[in-house]
Image (cartoon, rainbow, N blue to C red; front, top):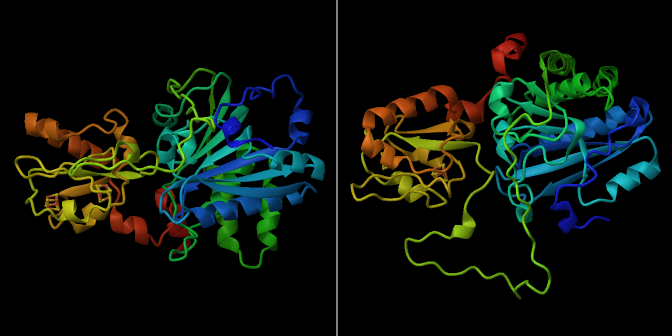
Length: 400
Ligand code: SF4
Ligand code: SF4
């Protein structure tokens, strides 16, 4: 069995798919990963894994699933992964399941595109490239309304060719107990069938859906929609963001301290070890000109992200912001705090934007308005959407 330490470094055998015939590749065990947001999307990920295994059964393959969190599974939004492993016989399935997590992935599906920027799914690995374990010729399937060019600004390059498949849509809460099913699971399955028929053919997953009494015509429609709408981009070796990932060096047992020590901080200091990582889908953008300095955001932020400037304003310290959106909800001034998709801030990173406002207010407003125009997340629509989560409203028309 692999250890956590082994799993912390990129596998050396990742190009083992080279030089094999298509029949050999088709007949070997396959691993499919679903990267998702904890709690919000866990039912969605579990449902997807279940269907991958059931579709494999249609060709007499066996399958199983594994789930892993890097943090408490009770934390909303924490990045998490669930895997479906399928194999032609029990021996090969056991061989592939006897691992901490699959080391080479045939398909990685990203259910929230802000995770493309790196994912800290297991706390002790640090923030890893989303496609770290994608094998030669593998497929990264992303639900996103962004173009391949935009996504490749944050997805690192690989030393071999791979496929980027984009299924139009926004992060879904379908399957969370308080929200109705929005068909995202079916759309993703349709997209996998189109891009990777070696995992399962469309007819196999269609037959699984047909046989389930709880699923109906709208699920079949969503399945077909995913199959038809997914857009496939072949990505050549070397295309993508520069890969600057450095595996975290884990301490040996002689270096470990005897207990967990959280060092005390002075009043007003933040703990440098508690910075946020890949658990943010959106971030607040503040309009300092309409701010009435009421301090409500400063009081209610659960992670104490707001600073207080000498003028009494409250800029956000993005190093610690988890993107929960509470500040935007409690701020009494309309649009003074707006939540914006975090992928809009690739260039800025976690930089403090208050000095930009102080220096040139007009430039700050142009910058702020552009961010909001491109990536505004409507808080109430996001959490109470009663139409399907994907773009274009096709399904909303169909189901109304
Ligand atoms: S979104 Fe707002 S309330 Fe939530 S952590 Fe960030 S700054 Fe704090
Ligand atoms: S809640 Fe809004 S108005 Fe009040 S201090 Fe914060 S940003 Fe300004």
